[in-house]
Image (cartoon, rainbow, N blue to C red):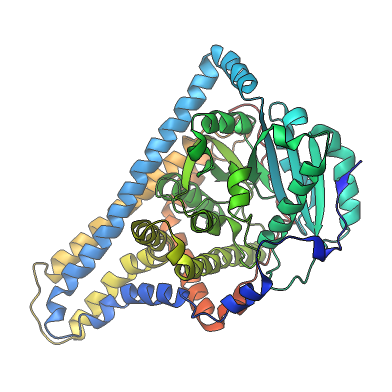
Length: 540
């Protein structure tokens, strides 16, 4: 019998968070204003420094030091990304050339047969073809019929939800151990409509169903939970690799970890700015988000024990992935670590019906991420007294701000525009001595930094486009041949303009959040109507 829930019965929902407290939280000073103030402090340096007596002598030196620090961050991220790429290629090579790995994988599966998997995703207006691609990739997981349960959270407002539910049950119910579909009620006080609230409801109801299922025998097994989007394509060995890494840790480590695979953003064809954004996001996965322990993204895995201890997902926030690590750290009062899975998963990038729609969807996605990051920073400041230690609070806040405030927003604008503004203002400002760096040397160093930045971007391009073993890539020629290489190099040239455009959208989004406050924190789902995913296969 299909494991579905009625769309009513809000009273039975144990949200885990008091709605009155959610509403009260909106009356706090919005701490994302501090985020914005710090960004503007960086961006305004080249304007006020040349005009300030005595201080103006150090203008060129300060600008060079700041751009140099941004370059250092890129260098560190590039080294981390290279190391992760080598680890992924090493695993893929061993899997390919050693026949005994197959036997080893079978032994691993047998040894950890007490582990079961639960994968949850949400669906609103996305096309069924997108959801089916995700479910098809889950069907390829080892022992999916006997060890993998799937929870799909639909909204009560999902068009034709009953027909979609029945279609999914008819095609996939026999393919997994359990298939559960829930309907998230709308209008629950304190919630923001979107994936966070839908996932929170689906997980709580889904686990309740599994615990009440006598045949499932829930308490006999250890469960690993995977949170994903409905446009995810998993590597066929994702669950097996996850179990292997999970089993290497002791009890405390297993329940203080979040596992993150490296995600590639692909579709059959896409504009250069969508393609470049996807390449950069993959690079930042390997170079910053995982090694700097900032936050998981898109789809990630953790023990059900940690999921429940961390009160599932926060229904009053819009980005359940950005808030996940810091929220679980705060609620459990122990440090949570992001651990890499050395394999590739695929997610769908933004898509639109025409070029203008593509630009709009791309900008809206950047806006969503930015506003989500600003809200997470506010959440962290309000709850920081519950962090396990002061050092961890300062450390995580610094890493979070460097990534979302500087790398994604201020650094590109500052590095490109500040040298121009500084030179122009120096010409009209009162005569003053230069400390260590003359104007001509300043220009030379800035051009050198421009060259090193493009060198980093070339390494990013080579790593992501031509070195990551993407499942199913043997049948995809997007980055192959003369056309693929030419496109890749052209997009490399266009990377800096794209990063600048991305940064300006981020800056605008932070300003919008500052002026409109909580009212702007809505999760308007990205359009998937024109998304055609590149499906992965067992080949790598």
